[in-house]
Structures are given as C-alpha cells and as structure tokens.
Amino acid sequence: MKLGSKPGLSASAWRGLLVQAALAVLAALLVGELTGHIGVGLAAVLGALLLRQLYLLQRVLVWLQGDRVDLAPDAGGVWGDVIGLIMRLFRRKQYHKRRMRQLLRELRHSTAAIPDGVVMLNPAAEILWFNRSAGELLHLRNRGDVGLRIDNLVRRPEFVNYLREGDYRSPVVVQASDLSEQYLHFQIVPYGAGQLLLLVRDVTRQAQLEAMRKDFVANASHELRSPLTVIAGYLETLSQDEALEPGLSGPIQEMRRQALRMTAIVQDLLELSRLEAEGAVPRGEPIDIGALLAQLRDDLRSRKTLAVEVRLAAESTDRLVGEEAQIHSACANLLENAAKYTPTGGVITMRWWSDAQGGHLSVADTGIGIAPEHLPRLTERFYRVDAGRSRASGGSGLGLAIVKHVLQRHGGSLQIESEEGRGSTFSCHFPVSRLLPAA
Image 1 (tube, helix red, strand yellow):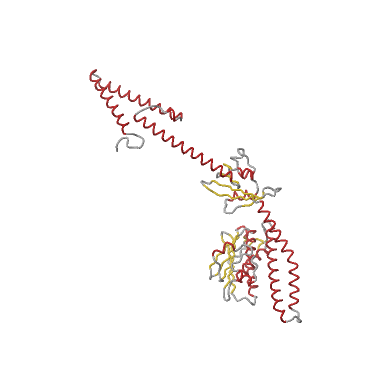
Image 2: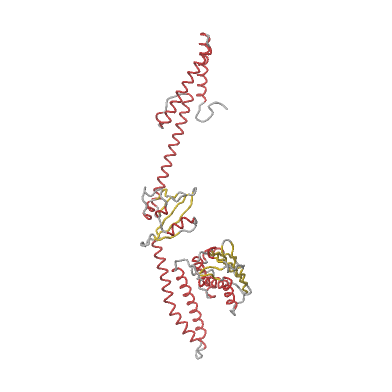
C-alpha cells in the first residue's frame, strides 16, 4: 500500500516530507564531515525538524480548540492535508447539524399543528417535551413543567392507574375534573429505550353523545316495557278465547310470539343499561359455579323441544366471588346461545376449572360455527352473523353484549374460539382475586 493512498492524504505531501527529511540529513552529514562532528550535526538537524512539527501540531491544536474553520493555520505538506481533512469533516458535521435542526424544526411545527396533544415522557414518566395542544388540554407550562412527572400534574385516579399498570394496549377515557364536563382520551405508546409517547384527545362531544345514547336506550326500554306487557296480556287472553274465529288464531299466535320477543329485547336492553350505570366493581358473595351450571343444565334439559346433549364438567370446587344475578345471566346467555346454534344430536359442554391464572368457565358446542371475520364483532349490540336465522330463533342480539359487560364488571374477559362446521367455544376468564377456596 502506497503512502498517501488514503482519501484526503496526498502522496505528493508524503514525498515532499520525505524529501525534506532526506535533504536535511544530507546537509547535516556534509556539515558534520566538514566540522568533524557528524553526530552533533545530525542531531541538530533532526531536532530542528521535530521542533517544526511540534510547532505545527500546536497551531493545529489551538485552531481546533477555537472551533473556527475560517482561522485554519497555513501549513503545507502532510499537515496541510490533515487540516484539509479536518475542515471537510467539520463542514460535513455542520451540514448534518443544520439538517438535524431543520428536521427538528419541521417536526415541532408538524406536531404543533396536530389537534391532538402529544407529550414525550422518559422511562420515569417525566415530561421531556409537549406540543401546544397538550399544553392547552392538560394546562401545562412551557418550561416550568418540563422534567416533572406527568402523574403529578394529571392526578385523575383512572389515568394514574393506567400509567402505573403498564398495560397500554387499550386507551382510557378520563373526566378532566369532578366539576368539569370535559372528557380526555389518553393513549400511551412505548418507544425507544423505555420512553413513552402520550397522546391526548378531547372526546367531550363523543362522551356526551354516548351518555345521550345510554339515556335514550334506558328511557325508551323502560317506557316500552309497560305497553308491551299489556299487549302480550291481551294477546294471550285472545288466544285462549274459544269464540275466536279459526282464521284469526294463526295471526294472533304470531303477534303474541313477536310481542314476547320484543319484551325479551326490552328486558335485555334494561339489563345492559343497569350494567352500564353501575360504575363500581361489585364485590358480591361466593357463588358455587358448579351448582349454578348444574341448575342451568337441568333447566335446558327440561325443554321438550331441545334435542341436544348437555354435559357438565365441574373440575374445581373454588367459589367465584361476584353478584350471583349477573353471573347467572352471563352463564344463561352463553348456554342459550349454544342451544340456538347447535343442531339436533349435537353436544353442549359446560366446564368450570381454576389454575394459577384464575377461574375459567367455558361453554363449548358442536354447532354450525362462526367465520373468523365475525369473531371480533360478536359482542357488539344487535350484531348478527346470520340475521335471518337469528330472527327465526327469537334471539335479541344482546346476549353476548351482556356477557361482556358482566365480565368487565368482575374484572374478567371473554375469549371466543370457533370453526365453521365444527362448533364454538366461549370461555370466561376471571382473576385470581375473584376466587375463594371451598370451605
């Protein structure tokens, strides 16, 4: 490899330095030959060369410490190439620095234009930066609040628990204060080395619309219950009238069936409204799930129209602590749902077991199954996989929504597994804190 072959260091500079050194050594030898002191002359010349290099090195160090590229020392040879390479690196650094500043400026301008609030947090949940929208929504000050923990400034219990639990898969909606009608939507997104990005959105309008919807459903259901009860009563009386014309018997029976179906829908809507209105998580009393499932199994077997086998596997004697009426409703809805979609000769299996993760209750059937694209929406109100079949079976489309709300109020979750043509399994999972060993 030749000298000066590396980028920035010219071969001519190295050759010039070697030529200077050779000439200096030759001159020292000639002077030493004439004076008779070759070693002294050679040492003097080499010392002079060394002093010159040290002088140039000192000038370069002073120049680098001053951080002024326009005051570069005038030096030729290798030192000139070194200074030139340093200047190129400095200019490249300045370019990237200006580019980074431009990108940061554009990022700040773009985030400032976002209507949602953005707050950058370090792993200790301390504020690193926030945009204008976050400052307005959370009442943050530009300098005074940077470096403070976000939960010291946003002290709503729901947000504090959300931040500390560390499970950021689902957002949380929080009322800004007890005296405010403003609602804020918080979503935390982890990034980098333990850093957090907090997204804040004003959802007051959506919260008000949701409250209006719940009030409307609750009020409408309550108002419909009384007239439906009267209509169903009169239809039942008419259906038992022996003087009724034979041609009217069929229509009246159909009217009665539809009235009963509407009554069931209203009752389910009222139950959903009660579940949504009860904010506190119920503690309840210990429930013998095995006995509850046995009772539901016997009730289902007593139906004359049922042509399926119902099995029960109570593998745990642990009690479930909760509100028995709500747990009974959830189990009944799951069992009713399985009975509707299991054909003649099929099997429904109810199972209750517990392990280190908590208590588990499942209802499995050998019915028609559900396509994968429908599974995420099954717990939505009135959602039907097959609307025609559901109406024929008299379903309200609210059973799974009730199950979901009951489980949420008890700290549980619903898992749905299904395969078309082979059946479905609905599993309810309860936390360990809801279990109580049998006495």
